[in-house]
Length: 548
Ligand code: J2J
Picture 1: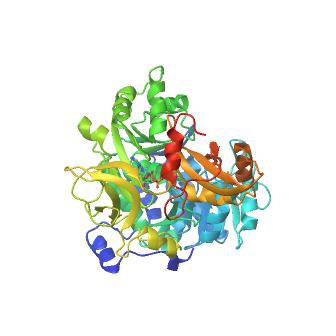
Picture 2: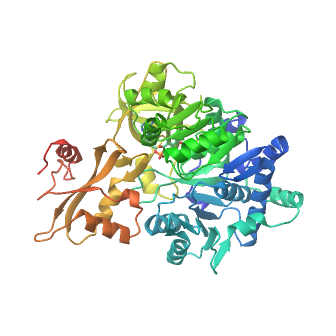
């Protein structure tokens, strides 16, 4: 990782954020010991039968940090982290944060294509994977990726089957030694609050990898304010079901919010209703989060479950559009209240208040967590709209970075010269200051909360020899909200099937959730006046009963 590729906040603002106590100038990796001193052996992390107390968490994170240091990783290095939800995820994250090694949060479905392009872009020195996960050999994947990267990268494996040439993460975590001596040694080499703490992937990477670097200062502030907005406290038992590498379960308020409050984080690698309900009952879960598609599945399944869900107080729902009618069903079905979340890995997070009246809880996506968040709604010409009117949301603030990592050309598009991040979302703001998401101008497909860039899919499919022109558009779907539909025109005499597209992308190592699920062949694609595929016309075409 090259610090020169990170866009800093302007110096005067950084100073103001520090002076106001927003940024504490402390590395995130220093917190587990503070919590251990305060909470001792109280349970911090649960994964099935495995429980870690706060002291365990601090000691094991330190042990792993020391092991990572011994393997040659240090402050300013970065590693890809691709782990399913489990206790090791938390220890790996804190070990990295302790040492100043930047974890780049990948998702379990990512494959060669994503790992290699992101790994090369950031210049990672390691890849942390499970041995196998859901029948897939991640260790072999990591070795293939490591050999394709321009710089050498270690493969660090969590699991029982650690092969020669890989580093065994669990052995490092369990290593002996004197915890206080280690604590002192690691304190002495800790990163600073303004260093990059972690990197998140942006929804809808457009060929150019869009990686968001978050500092210790900004990410801590974001987790702390989120926990406050959601009333997290020492009694909170938070269930993380969405992939933990997503900003939402990680820090909105998520795992970090629960730990910062002295509560407990329960990690579960599956959103299956039976598994989720069993975990809620077993652990007395008080709060969890889901994208609308998953929340709806739970709401339907709750009617017939015999599990005791009575401890559940709040469900946070966000990540994609939730209609007021559907929102109104979720809380009553699960016997808890709903807090909507409108957030983004780029920064800005909004919540409806825990005690909001139904019209706000169901009909809006809430208000920003910080009085220092700035929101600006603009029309297509870039002028502010009148209050209450719909336009594109721009935002700045103490936890919304000023640029993606290492992509100046992309930054000139995604950020204004005065540092506003263009969310690409169409919103209106109610007189009370709540955001209502009304649509989007950015070209992506939101499949059950996973963002898929149309441009990325189009670039890959365009490389198939049959294809003359291609456009990927969102196809409405009752289950996951949207799926990828591909429109293509072919070279004369060629044919193309959906299976061939899937095979080609899979062979390139593209994550399965991005593979198009419908293919429409047209003699030619409709075009806009500037010659681009007319996606509006294509979406209309999708809605006609019998597209030809
Ligand atoms: C409509 N669209 C939404 C919502 C996000 C908390 C919650 C979500 C994310 C997330 C996150 C939406 N209604 N309630 O990081 O910490 C769409 C918008 C937004 C994009 C960001 C968090 N909540 N969205 O979803 O980085 O289009 O973050 O710009 O994955 O998701 O996607 P992502």
